[in-house]
Image (cartoon, rainbow, N blue to C red; front, side, top):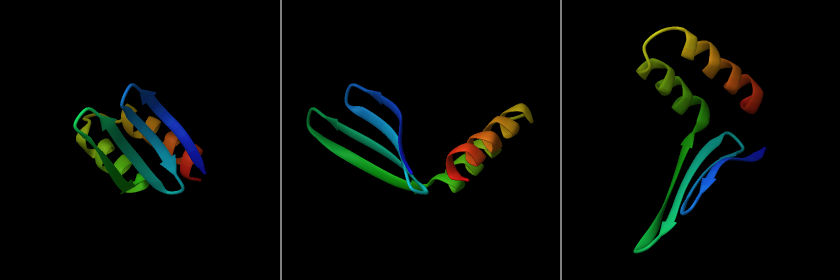
Length: 66
């Protein structure tokens, strides 16, 4: 599955299969970061205190990653 999650100006965030891709193409150059989306979302859930975010992140994982 390929899905744009956020595109604004020089920054784009998208899902490409099971990878979360963050791209920057602006003045002076560009950068591209690929990370396992499930791993990234798990780290995000750990970093945010409370349980509500965990439920939301798990729903996102189920919807986008299966």
